[in-house]
Amino acid sequence: MENILEIKNLNLFFDRYQALYNVNLSLKQGIMHALVGESGCGKTMTATSVMRLLPKSAVIKSGEIYFKGENLLEYKENRMRNLRGNNIALIPQDPMTSLNPLYTVGNQLIEAIRAHSKVSERQALRKAKEVMDLVKISDIDNKLNFYPHEFSGGMKQRIIIAMALACNAELIIADEPTTALDVTIQKQIMDLIDEIKKEFKTTILLISHDLALVSNYADYVSVMYAGHVVEEAPSEEFFKNPLHPYSVALLNSLPSKNPALKLKTIEGAPPNLQEIIPGCKFHPRCEFFQPGICDAKEPALKEKAIYHFSACLIK
Ligand SMILES: Nc1ncnc2c1ncn2[C@@H]1O[C@H](COP(=O)(O)OP(=O)(O)O)[C@@H](O)[C@H]1O
Ligand code: SF4
Ligand SMILES: [Mg+2]
Image 1 (tube, rainbow, N blue to C red):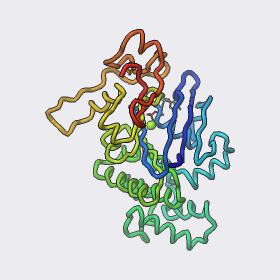
Image 2 (image 1 turned 45 degrees about the horizontal axis):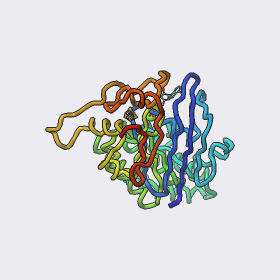
Image 3 (image 1 turned 90 degrees about the vertical axis):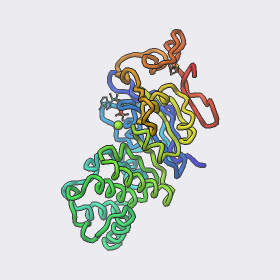
Image 4 (image 1 turned 135 degrees about the vertical axis):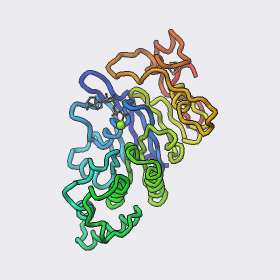
């Protein structure tokens, strides 16, 4: 299967420290690939590198980001802007960062549709209604005239997803799309993203710190720790047979379905990136730490089982 997105050896720096280390990520078309890890590990910086929407102080020193075989890092800004409207859509945690509070959602949808295809206002309106229907918004004629603030958080996320559909996005990057929503709405939005994946073969990069949610929806999982991808596997394999000690610790800290099982939390906190940690970045927190090995050499991702990669010197 063709890789629609391929990140190769991405190294991203801020002024005083490195935020991403040789990040590699390959997304096959039509799958949902989850990027997980504790806050601060580099998930959003990976996503914003693809969108080329990085903070001004961030510098990509090396690496390539291929979208359908073309290196986005070589694109001029106007070509990139065009791609953002047409091929790659972002669902952010806070939908108001993408919606304009001053315009009705109908106007915003119509504008988005007309910005990338030469259609009349009437045709754009028809398409706007069609995508609102696809994201299961009822009473569409009325809702088209609503301003974003008249919608709940979950409904605003539906509008963002409708925008992505209106533009026929081939890749949707969803960065903690349901973190701000309550559990029932969370499920509805994730079900909707999942349906879109299946119906339109849209590729989804799902960024989440919520492993329980990821286990229900993702086809592949990549785990990040302190700017490194430390494990990657098909989802089923990952949850059955996690290999990296950090992944195991993350999974052990999940509220289990078995209430008798005592929760283990991971000792310590993720490192401050300004701190220099020699060898494996996880070693100060790892129960399998071996002095002289884990603090001497940086582990690289290795295929330890079929399609199952882990970056650990011991396990
Ligand atoms: N604007 C910024 N300036 C400096 N450092 C930043 C900025 N944004 C993010 N970072 C750093 O990059 C690291 C990765 O951040 P991020 O990708 O947002 O993490 P995640 O999404 O996994 O929580 C963080 O540790 C943070 O310190
Ligand atoms: S390399 Fe060592 S410290 Fe790092 S995860 Fe493996 S066992 Fe733990
Ligand atoms: Mg983030």
